[in-house]
Length: 102
Image (cartoon, rainbow, N blue to C red):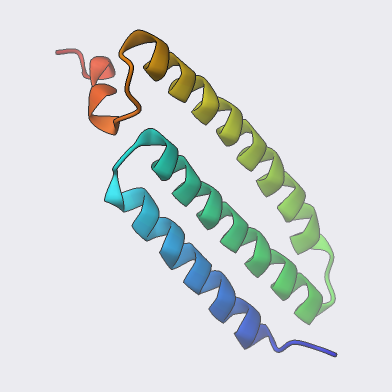
């Protein structure tokens, strides 16, 4: 059973929109990182769908790079979350303004 590319892209765009809304809501650092993970997953789904539709394996190879990027982002996010909990006791994004120079 073949799924049309338009359906794959519709699911990917819906998932990307959910991730973008989650990242823009800006409640905590963890929710922003979950939103970014959703957006990376949507990009991976679009890459694989296009790769299968066009019979080219380059999209599937790009997904491996996207998965590596997602793993690095998850590690960085967990490090930021642990640092925020240890230093200030919160995971709020507004507490991460120490890099602004003020």
